[in-house]
Length: 255
Image 1 (cartoon, one colour):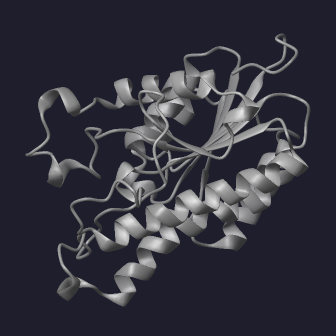
Image 2: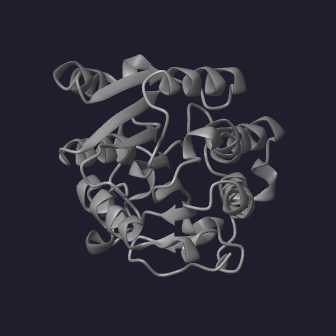
């Protein structure tokens, strides 16, 4: 990802970089000498690797606490980033929840709980559109830019053949609709920004850990492999691809 003037640095924001895929993106982007990275975390107790990296890379990595479900915090984050740079070239939202504490994906209707459903939507869906709302001014520039959110293939309504996982499936489907609708408005207001949802595949992270037993070894990706594959997909996109849902291998997924 390079701006129109190759001598300039690019500016990337990774939201949800305390671990897993988000931290992998931070590490991969820091390996590119021209990228200035901004990253967020929610819980400092679970972000030690990111915070340690920020200490050793203080000239190129700035980190900020953020609860993506709190719009005031999203607004404050953007204000802080604007004090550092007037533009962003790449934003990747990696925030997501599948299980947390007593919350586990529902296998049947009898397990539906309204508080859990609301939590899924707050974390997996609404945060992305709050980001899009407040980040819009940072995308109003002439360089190619990207706004991507990590979604999941199980959020595809057409592909749903097994059922279950009600809250996770529905919240990822809602995320996909948000990203599609954001893409339409961004096309009018910042036409150089490509907006997409991404399916990373099953990655060896804490999110997938309880569900890896039935995953064939060749389909369980390391974080490094997942990040490399997704960066390859993102680098291949053009403005004509905005508003779509892509898998880790670059194929388009059905809504």
